[in-house]
Image (cartoon, rainbow over all chains, first blue to last red):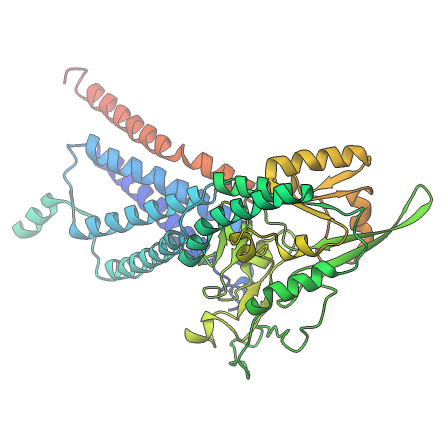
Length: 164
Length: 331
């Protein structure tokens, strides 16, 4: 595999992840009636944030993208063994949060289907855990961007740095 | 919630007991026994409203108010100042005697339509309250789980949890829930910046159902406008009734199906044009299934992992071929 191909793949994955993350956070917070109250939905181009059925559909669409992207990244990592990269602690931490978000989200999607009944305390717990994980992942992502902590590291780069 | 659950399990016995006794005593209450049996099986129960019988006496309205009086809001005044200033204060506590629309203190009212049928002017009266949808958007889209649905078909807003954001009202195709400011959980969190009271609507007298009794509005009606029973049976009865009067049905398919089925001798589009609509006064228009788009997307979501796996294998295959051709086909 050529390095340019690998670089293109990683940049594409990062771009799709960033786009998905932004829309999931916006549409996720849009499930609460806050954007209209705080004038954000009045900003041109943001009116959709106050339309609950629109944010609901957009959240589902980008959740599908996130699930597909996650499956792609995990399988690509397993199949492409020659790639010299290791998952960092940051990567593992974010993965756990994303798995938690996808798990709780999956239950909530199932709950919304007609004829599906969950215990009410479970629904409340799912709502709170889903929101909590999102908040933690959001703030942790800000931190990792500022601290320049990556999901993966390339040991060869560490060796090259030491040689320099 | 657990309280209701325990009541529900008690109610099954009580409902069966009460229902069976009533069924033996009065033929008209056999629906109670069948509703009890449906409750025992965990099936939804529905109400059938023969609006050709309604004389607008409002007995149901006052029975509802009496039965649910202890659930009505008791707001603390003065209300906390809310920010920003656009947040509306919704105060009905000085207007509790209003009965001509839905309010937090009036969960059922009589809507009247004057229509002309075959040259004859007719007045049709329609008791209006929550439709108790089969897949209620108010419940499914509530961001806090404050709105609940029970297997018996009742949807209910938990006034101890609701923050009064009014999302349920916006999600409801009929805009049924009504808000009262100055009451509820938001007062204990950030009353100035989040929440705005509690949303209120008909809960089909869940506490009476739990005791094996009829909802107050059903029980009080002197004209027997309403019948309660297992949804399948109610739908069958609605079709029989509609056929017998050459009438029309509303609520069976609206919003993907509801547990409140109206049968009218006049088409509902005519009634919809004739009734007064607006805040607290729901329409009788056709309603598409509000949750259908989301649930179709949920089905499509099942394909997402397959797409990801296919893309990863595709890339692996492509890279393997490139490597093979770069090494002259000899790996």
